[in-house]
Picture 1: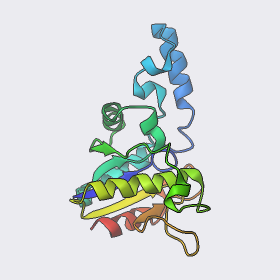
Picture 2: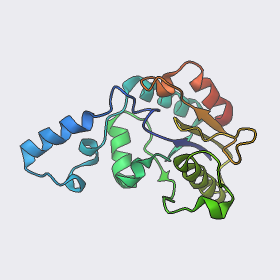
Picture 3: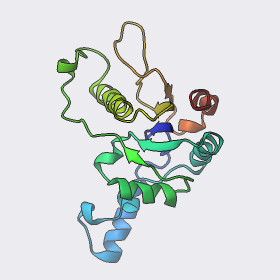
Picture 4: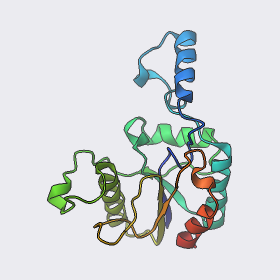
Length: 187
């Protein structure tokens, strides 16, 4: 089994889409009278994906047969079923098969990660590593994120199979060379 651990913001939901949910929510409230965010459909309360970024993701999936596991913190704001629907509505050829476990209460000091990276990066690395440990059938994998989850000298733990999307925030997975880096880990 081949897996793409996928972050959303800064990867397929880019800077130009951020805040689109505010307009969608205002319109939804006006049309339905429902103002409680948790009662709104996911496509209303979350931002949309960049169409060109989705095309790149679909090309990688098409060439490798990889499945998507959502590692994004969007998992805190929507169920797997809602994310599956959202991905398909945004043109992704495969819905995610899973989300990484939410370990927001993870204590990095008990795992020997005292000063390594930021809190979000530490948690995301541990969540991906736990998913890999719990799913030994995974033969190829890559994580893509705008947070630096990779291994670096003198910085402690990190993910070996990692692709970083760099600034500017309106490029994400569309950046030159990113697709080739993903394919390197999945083929």
